[in-house]
Image 1: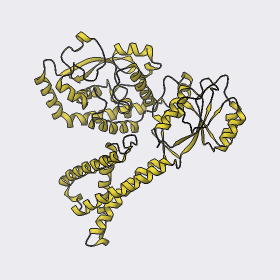
Image 2: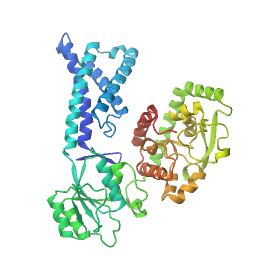
Image 3: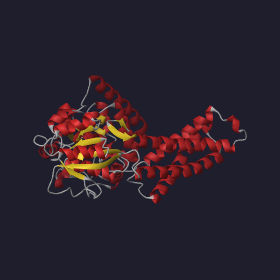
Length: 465
C-alpha cells in the first residue's frame, strides 16, 4: 500500500519504519527511567513529555545526517558512523536545551542507558527493515509497457531505489528486434503484438499496476487488452504521471502539452497566493531580525578582504517575465565578468574570493535576497531566479522553460534542495523537471518541507559553487 504525501507516493512500510524508530527511542528512554527509578510506579506525564523531546531531537538528527537515505547508508560501517554522529549531536542539542530549561532534564544515568539501549534496538530495527527490503515484502508488482526513454528512466529509478515500494515483474516491450540493454536478466519480457500472452502474463504474475510508457500510442495502443486488465482490477497508469509521483519531478523531454493540460495541479487560487505571500513576509522578517548580527559581520569582512562594494546587484527575470534587481553579498572580485562575460560559476572558479568561497558554500551570499522577498520581487520558495542572457539560450534548447515564469522566483526551491547547482544545459533540464513539479503542486505545506530541507542543505554545504 502507498501513502500520498506532497503528490509523491511512499510505501506505508517506509512510514511505519520511521514511526517505529521513533517508538524505539521513546520506549528506550521510558524503560531506562523505569529501570533506574527509586519508585518505578511514579512514572508520570512529565516524564513522557521529556521522552518525546529526546525522541524528536534524535529523529531530527537522524534525518539531517541522511540516515533515512538508503543510497547514503548502503554499508554497515557508514550506518554505524552516522548513527553515532547523530546521537552525539543529539546529546549536544539536548545539553543546550537542558541548560536553558532545567525543568526538562532527566537523570544522567537514565539518559546514558537510554542512548545505549536505543543504539542496540535501532540496529536490530534497521536490520529487520533491510531484510524486508531485500526480500521485497509488501512491494507492489508492476509491469512497464513500452521501450521509450521514459520507460527506461522509470526502470532505472525503481532498480536503483530498493525502498520505493515497487517491483518490476514484467516488461511489455514494443521492440521485437532486441531487448533494452538496461534490463536485468531476471526481468521477464514479452512483446506488445501478442495480446493473449500479455493478458496471461499479467494474470499469472499477479501484476498490481501497469505503467504505460509507449513510444507511440496512435498506431499500436493495446486499448482492448488494457481495458480488460483495468476491469479485472489491475491499475493502469500513464507513464508521465507515474514518473512524477515516483521521483518528485516531471520529464520535460517526454511530456506533451495534452498531458499538462489534463493533469491535476497548477491551481494557483487567490487565497493560495495570499497565504504564500503571508508566509514569505513572516519567514523573511524573522530571519532578518535573527540573522542581523551575522549579516553585519559578513558585510564587514567582505569590505576588509577585497576592493569593491559589499553588495552585488544583478538583473534577474521574475514572475510574468518582469525584470528586477537581485541582491547578494559580493563573493567574486570586482567586475568579475568584464573579461569572461556572462557564464555560470564553476568548481574552483578563480573569480571567487576567499571569503566568497566560504559564504557561497554555506549559501550566506544569498541572505540579502531576504530584502527581495520583503519587496515582493521574490518568494521565499520558488524556481531559481535566472538572467535574461541565459533564459534566451535555455528557451531555445528546453521545452516548457518559459512556464517557470508563472510564479515568483525563490530564495530556495524544490530544485535547489533536490538537485543542487547546475552549470550545463543538461543540469538546467533536470532543474526544470523539479521546478515544474513544484509549480504544478505548490502549497504552503510543500513550502514548509522545502524550508526544512534547505536547512539540511545549508548545514552540510551541499550543491554550492
